[in-house]
Image (cartoon, rainbow, N blue to C red; front, side):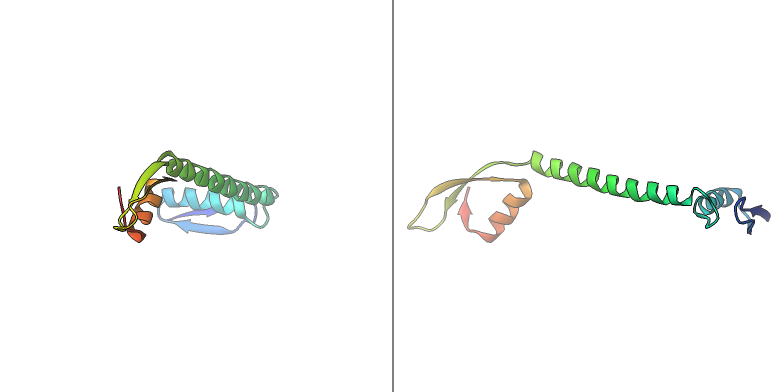
Length: 104
């Protein structure tokens, strides 16, 4: 076992694996209560989380919108048989088909 000491609070930690020690110690030292840059690191984490969420949402939206196209439907009612179109994504199209009775 090897002992590591935090450079901010002088707290000691023992680890069997150098790999685990490195990851834990860097995380502890960044978030250590006595680290003068702690608030900066916390703000960076909050900013990156928000930015990542916005980007992920936009990418998902773009992927869904890429499947949007005009779909043609014909009413199955023997008295109707009207044809109409809707602008739907693949998912909307599947949902629409399962709830309505239309011919394509």
